[in-house]
Image 1 (tube, rainbow, N blue to C red):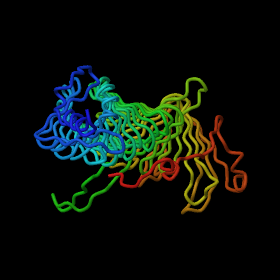
Image 2: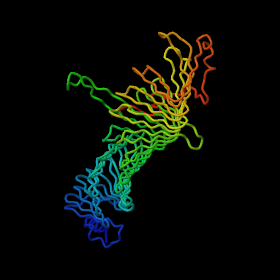
Image 3: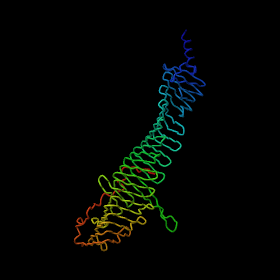
Image 4: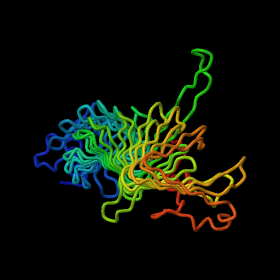
Length: 468
């Protein structure tokens, strides 16, 4: 047989549809189409298939306008209206590659993957039909019946229904929006584990939670933040004048930071923050070991550290309060009632004389407010007090007293009147014996007035850009 006849036979075999190939193992790529052109380029056999192209390998089925099959590499280039299917998975793109040995597809063109109710899209990506996982990059977007997710890149593990999103991650569901640098997300349970620059924004109560690591479990209505958590709740109040005419909007922001924060969105509707807790809202602040914040009831419960017996500190205006536990009731976004129980100590700093502190100790304390302003405080049980006297703002000594009950009345948050009940006893110290000796006039268990948290301290670990 001469060389020309041999080449004709070889070319004929190249032009035969692949369906006629005798090999039937799972690794075989089978290709059909309206027309086929065979080529031999640098010793490699290449088939170009045109129009109504169908490519199959096992349970993977591909359709496209044109395919270029590299026989020796067991790969196929896919061109035009590419649709790839395997069971519930469908991938659509304009151009890509299918690698037969690895059972994998890849494209640097925009693509869309659908899996039941879920749709994934990106500018580039790849999918393994053997391992059932995908990797998408650039402008990644996921949507399903209840959730949408965007990120710079995403790994999708179909069998585990798990995703790992990275870079500018944003996930939105019916109750929350989570922003972070990286996210582990489980489709079936909707559980999410977020890391680095985390922000969770609630749609129901104007609450934003920041942190370095967050875990959200929707089925349990539970969220925990364990790295630098900060809770921010923004409340707005429409103030009225002249009947129902709206005059202005007042914005109050509650800030709570700690080392550990838990949110219970069940019937408790509660935040629990622990370890190095700092709270700030307007003229109210606190440092403590544990705080429970009941959002629905607008109640704060602050307790001591049971291991160290360190009491919580609370500040209102220029007054510092300590006690074994402190409960605060909020009404219309303002403090309405405060109760401190056991080993209560109250210190008030004079605005014009910073080294002079009124002091009161007792067993328990009740403070009553109207419109956020303190109007009355009752202190019960073994009350001891030191109060500095002033005559038209001129220093005028101090009085030391004891009683079973003390009632302090306020006007514009300043002491107006003090009344003592239950065998009261008072002694007066003239100014000449007090001036320069203020440090000598302190009650037992005096706690220095210091370490009041400030807003910049609470906000130092978070990025406030685009918090809305």
